[in-house]
Image (tube, rainbow, N blue to C red; front, side, top):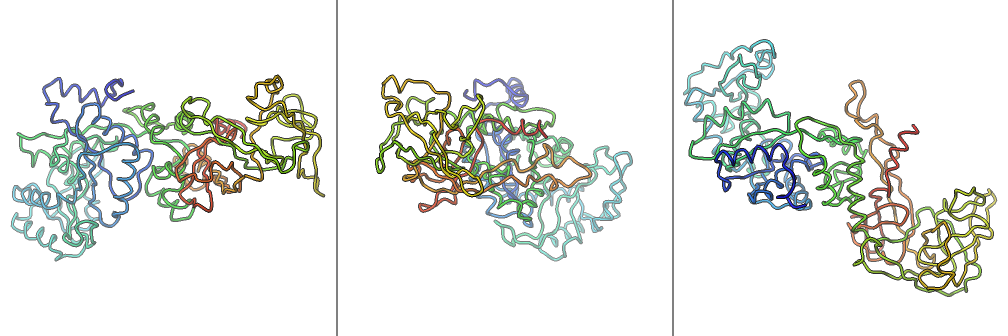
Length: 561
């Protein structure tokens, strides 16, 4: 479904109402404003899809703006990672912007506020200011420096900029109302001193603007028409508007802030602080670990941009926070991979099977479909020989009538191949089955058109020829947390709910057509699930990640526990 034909969400209704009231469509401009202090996660995907989706619906430009006002936590590597994530999701921005580009304009506006008596330098400690802030039911009290002379404020503010003072000695505050019912309006801090190099401006500045002062003014400089943010910023809207009132030229577009709800995902956390802790404590192997909810982690896991965009479309844009079950995201992933992922054969828990009446040293190449749901996907050849691997769990010596896989005296069809019958098995000294001996029906070859080839048996097994199989490292990933909301327990640390079985590494065997598979290639391992080639893979060593199973087994596991 294209953007123009989708039903409207409540944000789009706001835009439509503005257009109906005379706002010029050509003045529409949106933005996605990440802070470059970490990697984007699945929660950011809603904001990305919302803002860039609005751009597509209204044929309007969308800026990618980095709100880079805290050099203590921000780095260029995060800028590059964010750009890569947005591009991978399938979006293009009109302008690449940085709040740091506006530092001089923001400083000039701050000087103007001081000259108008609407901002002042406060020399109290942060503890003293906190005491004077008041409570939601009690007004705050004025700083003893609130009525400093304009000339003194200008001198001190310039000194702060020039690096004349140590960190924490002064801040610049807006002079609004210490008795406001909205505590954010009680003389908020606009600037603090930080003697740290910035990833773009280096050491040009010794003061850095606060988010509330920077964000709305940056929207205004870029002439953003609709500034969309999550619900926790709803209380900030009054301050956003107050700051705009101080600088806005009535002839220019006034940005409109509107809020939408976060869509939290079950069995994960999205707090950057908590994600960083997972990385630093070695629970995961970096920000792009396939168990992480980061976009780079989902990408490495084998998710597709289409599946994430479809998931975001399904959950929609809401006015209330909600917890979305991760199984819905996995549903959209399966739905897309089912259409696009080639089917291949791999065996992850192998047991040897020998077809005793198949000629020794002989091999043949059997034709099999690449994707039965896609007529354009074509076919390929897979090698067949006397000795094969099948999955260990696909064989039992004895089994009841509901077991449709291989058992002694029973028959199954090998995928795209022959019907075989198990006649015996060999065990080691501990009673473990080491080899299965079978016979095959030479006339039962799939697609041969003979009566035997059309004979029905209830089970079909995947397999690989031992002589042709390629060994591969396979990483079996599962959900990172066993609790659906690990960070919602007031008396427990979210780390208590880490799934200790979230990663198992095994050696499997795959068919030779995968020899030249490249990182990010995605496949369905028949009967096993969807897998993709990891970035760690080399021409000498294949590495696969399990992306998702063929069906949602997690819910059944939860029911049993």
